[in-house]
Image 1 (cartoon, rainbow, N blue to C red):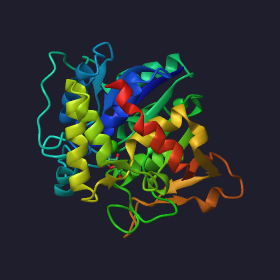
Image 2: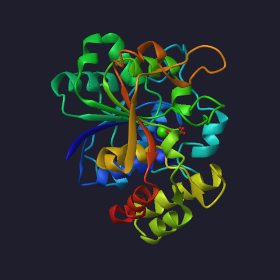
Image 3: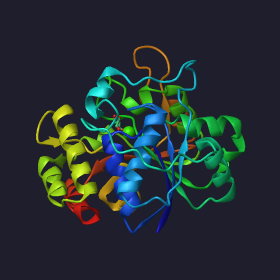
Length: 309
Ligand code: BDR
Ligand code: CA
């Protein structure tokens, strides 16, 4: 059983990742910290609380994180493209029901900092910009010696980006944070577009979820329908954020190679994850980069999600 914290910008694929983490017997979900990206940080918390109530996981605490990138002076407002892919509120063409629960009174940063100081046997999975983690590492540099594991969905090392030719969306929204985390020396696994664009969720998955008839099944099915229509516009779409949670449960589905990584922060390739050639000789602080995935096994896992609904 893996003790896990999720750091989410809760749009549609984040919602599917959350459902897996909340329901799978292999994961003990300790909390969700919210970030901005697909939605504002407040909308991320709203959606997370609502989904946790549908998932009957009102026991999982939710914390609000920083509302902007490291260098930004104003709160993040989602871009047109993000609103199109994830919907006006990050939940397709519906607004999720408001949960009676509120976010916890302490910040995501306060929660994660004390958890990291207390325990080293946990995994943190991030599926949005890594601002929360970076803020912690900047304020508490000693935590770069932390022995826990980080898994992040983001970056594109061997394939083109999805914001522009070079950059993937989560890294692009806060390159300085991503650079801080990737150069920290922590135990990090990268789940980038290199693998998430190699697998698919299908229209038939959405159909099966809706057929379950439960509020959770109907909601997740409608979210996936919307996502299918607004990503590739076909009956299949990429598997970004769920792949990061599935890696924790089934690392054997993936092929990893170790590289020292950093992030370009200048010029036209701002936001691009690259191999840090300055560290190629020492190979210090290498990150496990997922470069291939067994499509049959991963899609088989996803086809089985209906058991949670
Ligand atoms: C990432 O960007 C967001 O839109 C998704 O939720 C995912 O985390 C894919 O580039
Ligand atoms: Ca995300």
